[in-house]
Amino acid sequence: MKRYWKMFILVVVGLLALTACSSGNKEGDGASDKLVIYTPNSEGLINATIPAFEEKYGIKVELIQAGTGELFKKLESEKDSPVADVMFGGTYTIYALHGDLFEEYVSSENENVIEDYRNTNGYSTPFTLDGSVLVINKDLTKGMDIKGYADLINPELKGRISTADPVNSSSAFSQLTNILLAKGGYDSEEAWKYVEELFTNIDGKISSSSSNVYKTVADGEMAVGLSYEDPTVKLLNDGANVEIIYPEEGTVFLPANSAVVKNAKNIDNAKKFIDFIISKDVQEVLAKSTTNRPVRDDVEIGENMKPLAEIKTLTEDYGYVIQHKDEIVQRYNEIFVEIQSK
Image 1 (cartoon, rainbow, N blue to C red):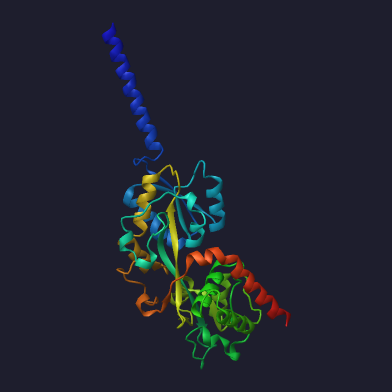
Image 2 (cartoon, rainbow, N blue to C red):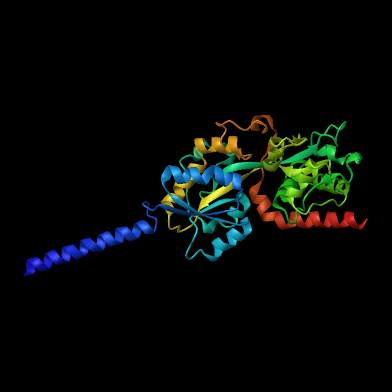
């Protein structure tokens, strides 16, 4: 009787072990076939990555799309019981301010990324780059030699330069910090004097959105736009009569990032996704099928995108900008209000 009782116990223990294994698979211990991704990215970027990932690994991706700010608020509210496994998109700054939401993970592909854009904080992985540029309407700027920021003070351009509001637009704020860095530094009086001269020449022509900036230039409503590379390259690809100017004073390229959510249910799949988006194959697809600049220099870029080696680049001081963002915005605001009151 004792012998049969021992056998019964062994069978029960075995069944419990199988149940635990089955439960673990559902929770994403590596055998899961699911991945939940939060993303603010464009359809073009999503279409170039998600289906290929699903096909390669047999993993079904559940995609939740919204603005970057909204998604980070969701991550914050869900941190005790995370829904997402991966955050796919958003600037370095917002990741730096929310490091507690993410798992430490550095991809084995990290060493193949351009050195200045590698994962250095241990959790956020850059996967594409975007730079502040000038986009000009070739008809409306005939006879003008526009090579950089200094040329925008031209009186002929007064009221014909379009920009979004640095207070409310992340791309316009990036353009502002690019200008400050290019003109002497974030706290340089000379740089801020240039900002005052530039916005005097802009003459209150603040666009309602960043997309409106390049659209008004392409449509011939404005001569110059303070914009960013991704959509302006798309304008060129679509045959618009515009030219992209990388300021001769220097261009800052900022990375879009991705990271594994802390305590993600499908953590192994999340790590696979991070590896996947910076792999050479996927970076080549991004370079050829989208207008996003890759973070690797061993892939060929699109025909309307200037090689990074041919552009004078500047490196953002992320720590300074994060710490002093409110001060930068406040000083810009004071300058703008003063100009408008004259």
